[in-house]
Image 1 (tube, rainbow, N blue to C red):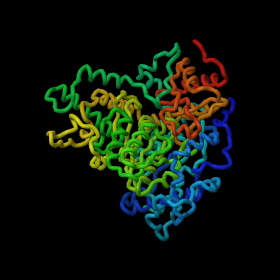
Image 2: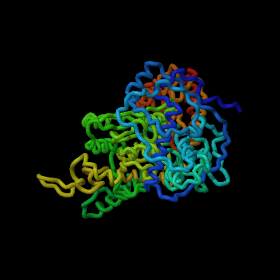
Image 3: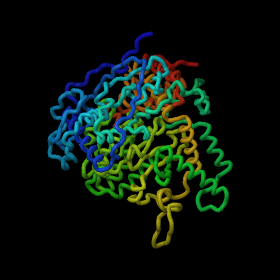
Image 4: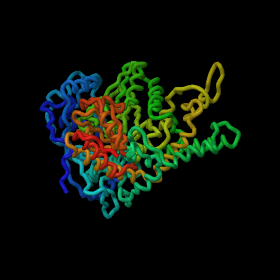
Length: 635
């Protein structure tokens, strides 16, 4: 068998790095700041004393071929300038110089003569919150922080020798963390001997809470592998997958845009309309009671799925876009001129435009955390944007254009350190790996039903009880009131306060059925199988001559954006359609992230648990024929 080609062409970066490249000193300062804040939080009671000092890491064996990631070609100067202009890097405050210590495991990075101009800061530089305790060895926590930053990893991907993952005797799946190829995230034993620091680590690594950074829990024996995931049985649950397009079997690779629906969801919708159809609440008849029970039962299902403490913290909306608009309107009412909203360069337009509208109404300012050329948020730049004027931080849990999984827990903790409200866009995460909002610590978590095998026109917002207390209603009408006169209205308690009018009852019930279906399959099993698919698809597409994969983050969901030289992305999408493949071609409503790479559009196959290795092989063969200038196969 021929050795696989390297997945990315080895193209050296230009000698002068991008302005937001980070020096070792900058990373050390940010790591030191985060360590101090974490210790301060623990000493203040944020982490229970005496928490577990270690968490078992999986022992993994991956028969693989190591394939190094190389940097993608840099955009030309004009395109780079176009990307850099909106980013507020020129206003970043100088990083604090006090208390800087080296961080073990940090790689040598190129010197950046003028990466962060030493201009007068726009706000006071953050100071250390607590001094290091005498006699305490902080090297373990520094290693822990280096692990979170990802600096202990080589930028590589392992392609499995076969489609199945191997399993250690303990039963753990290889490659349990997205993009880490089975490597342990943190050195074993580095936190032993210091209960306070170990408690900080335990808070972020607890096996009882699904990590928000994209990994999936692997500490329990019997962790399922792709070999135990019966994809053919799963596919039989989705009637549309039997369709033929232009005479060829449908291969649905447009899952980041919408997912297909299992028969269980279709049946739930049909049953409601055939047997239980009624408006909810206040009805004195049987059908009203049945419809209300089903609707509120779905609310509880959403709360359980997200790990929310109460179903009262779940607000039904039309989808992720409406959910973010709800939050932006409600929180926007609390903004003042000069307040700051922090986003990232990875955001979907739905997590940009509502905040722009809020900023225009209030005089607030939007600041943007940049990404690097792998598509990862530069955490030291993100940290430097946070300050006393930061009121809201909103970011995607996973990027719809590049697939990058963001370290949600860490970014949330950093934002909470300056008192900001945190909004997480979970549209691209909930269907791929376990999510626990309590572990993340955010104020709001938003997702769409149609992205997780549910109906269109329904979604949910998790909003903490604390956040709801400060939010005015954003729509008025029936259902959201307690008492109305022409002089005054008393509003209902949440979540009814935010659900004016007749809700989308049937699709809320369908959403509950979809979440039940995913739960029955097992989210850890789904994550392991999809990770295996992602590795296989990355290897196959990257081996195609001339193809450029865009977005090479270490932790990804199953999104593979690519371009072919000299071929229009829409044309590629149309040619693939003739062979039965459904892929997205365009800017994916995420133009800023693509413009970072000097692109206006990509072809984007995106994966779900009903896709197969055989479908990926068919897709790769078809793309290679297009790359070589051959017409697609005809029946």
